[in-house]
Image 1 (tube, helix red, strand yellow):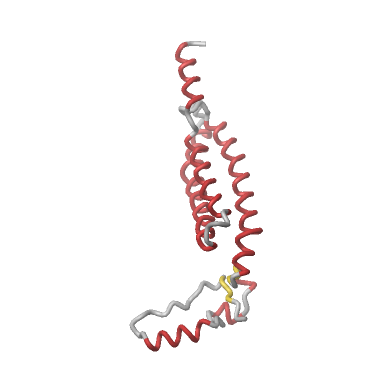
Image 2 (tube, rainbow, N blue to C red):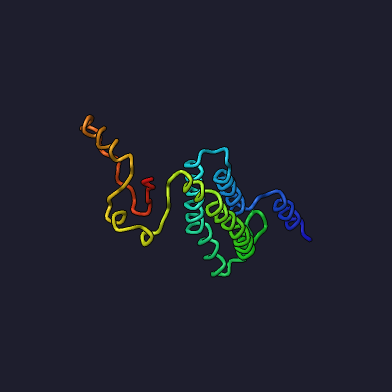
Length: 168
């Protein structure tokens, strides 16, 4: 082995892969979504940030690696990986993370939101009143009262049709 190869090999052992390191950062964001010590809506926000980050990661970093692999670039990154190796490791880690995200959503966040009277539904699962924008939220009377007293403040009673409020 040449001196240059040995130096590169030692450097690769000390360096982290940029993309895999970024995935570990995003895993910490996902861990906040799973942390029951964090308020529910903050947990939901962290789950959303995780998804948004992952979308951008694929659009920018994974797309770049795929382009390099498609062009046959055999150039190793500073950590010693060729694009195909990095893509394989990224795929494995993303599968783990998205499985965890799905578990957190289905077994923790969605049931906790249901317990708070916040139901996430498909539009097809909502009734006609909910799809047309009418709401049977018991807080509507309070909002109308406050609005009549404070005409200068806008009413905040429009929700996306996917959120169906419990009227009971």
